[in-house]
Every structure is written in structure tokens, then in C-alpha cells.
Amino acid sequence: MRHALAALLLTVLPLLAHAAPVEQLKLLAEHPVDGMVGGNLSGIAACGDRLWTESDRDDGIIYRLDTRDTVWKAENVLIDVPPPPADTGLPMMLRATAHAAAVIRGGILDFEGISCDAQGNRYLVSEGFAAVLQVPVDGKPNWLKIDPAIIREANAKGMLRHFNAIFEGLAINAAGDHLWLAAERQHRGLLSVYKQADGTWGCKGGCILLNEGGTEMQPDKLPKPHLVARDFADLSLYKGKLYTLERNIYQICRRDLQTAKVEHCWSFADEALLPNRQYSQEYGLAEALIVDDTGAWVGIDNNDGARADGEVRPIVWRFAAPAGGWNAAP
Image (cartoon, rainbow, N blue to C red; front, side, top):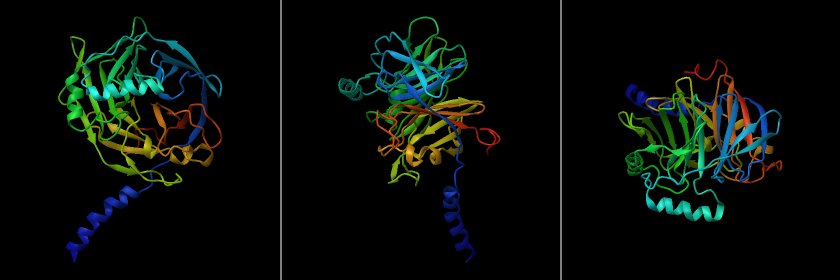
């Protein structure tokens, strides 16, 4: 009997732990964004005291955000993007598909994340080519020389295999010599690459920190919650931890920098899924994340779709940090 009870507890306790409620973040402010040419806000970054964003439909523009009013204004900053690398390691069929899709929707580079180093240099990840563009404070934009073998290895292990499910976010350290990349879904993953002495980017040990398949259930506040692929939508580096935006389950999770093991998660579903804020699209739309001392910025790429209240502009939310701070929770 004791053995049977022990076996039952081993089965039930993990399920109970998994079912425990996740702490909800408190929404402090909501900011519609005017002025993005292609809409589709797909990343956000803090460079000093200014916020920057990008669109996955605009290849030659990044946006400096004027945040002085409730409605933010996106100020166009033109960038002269050189041709992407001839070989990034991404299979040719996926690159060809990106070309074909761009004819219809625009944005062949499909920028899906933006980050800044301490000097203010900006870094954008191209989902269309699995490549990273540096936009320096001074000088012309240039593509980082990331070893194509890293992309091929990730592809061979099940990541970066589906169109529109390649890299969805990135984070750079303050020194600008260590980069993390988020593979979106089917499989999702986290990659870590370093700048070498010769200017190329490669691995120290293994590049792949996480490679994960499977599905998760959407929050029950959605009208028709269903199982969705585990995904990443953006990354933020804060005080020695990596924070992942887990779009389809409406959560922000803190992860170990070296192992990518999840340590704690917080939900923003209660605020995001109030009836007036819901979209008809049946998947998460949060695609931009900054975690800082007092809270988090979360940006919404609504794909030009209207919310229940009629709002059609991209949105940036400000959430308060959890009690005790982001790194206090076990």
C-alpha cells in the first residue's frame, strides 16, 4: 500500500505543481503607436533613455519612439541595409519562400527583434535570412558574420525548419560581444553566440542552450482556448538573467543564462485578455519585450487587425515589476 501511495504522489504532485496559478502582472499603462509605415511592431529596445522599435514589414526603416504622450509617435529613421549574406546556413527553400512572401506582404528581411549594447549600437534579427544586422551609432549597417554551421546545426536538430518560424527575438550584452537568439517554434530554442577575435561569431562550448518541442494550453480567458506550439516571441537580458516572452501562453519567464532552464514565470493574461483588448486572431500577438528595474514593456503586433474596442494601431503595454523585483522569486 505504501508503495502504491508513493507512486500515486509521484504522479499527482507534478501535476498539482504545474496547475498552480501563475502570478499575474499589473498593467500600469497602455500606449497606441502612431506613425509606423508598415504597422506590425515586432520588437522593442531601450538605448539609453530612448525606446526603439521595428516592423517586420519595413526593411529600410527603424523607429525611434517619442513617448512623451499617452499615444506614442514612431519617428522614422532610414537605414541603408546591405544585401544579406549569401549563405547564413538557412536552407535555400526557406529563403526562397521568404522572397515569395515578400512580394505579397512586403518585408523580405522580416525583422523580428531589436536589441542595443551599452554604446547604443542596435541589432536586428532577420527571420527571412536567419541573420543579424548591426546598426551602429556611427557608420553603415553591417551583417554580423555568424558561422553558418551554427544555423545548420540548429536546423539539423529540429529548429528553424518552418517558414515564418525562424528567429523571433534576440538580446545582446552590454559589451556587444555575446548574443542570444530565440528560435520561434516547432521546435523553439535558444542559441548563444560570441564575437571572436577575428570579428566572426561562434560558440564557446555548445551554441544550443535549449531545443524544445511540444504544446501548451492557452489561457482559459480566451473564447476558444486550445493547445498551441511552445514558442518564443522575444528576449530581454536583465541583471544576469534571460527573460523570454512566451506569446501563446501570455507569460514572461526568467531563465538561467548558461542553461536556459526556466526559473520562474509571470502571466499577463488577465490584463491582455480583458474583453475590450481581445483580437479575433486565435494566437498570441505579443512580440516585443523589455524587462527593467521597475517593470516590463510588452509590444503587440496586431497584424493590422482590430481589437474588440476598435483599436487598430500597434500597442505597447507597461506592466509593473512583481513584488520584490524580477529576480526575487524562487
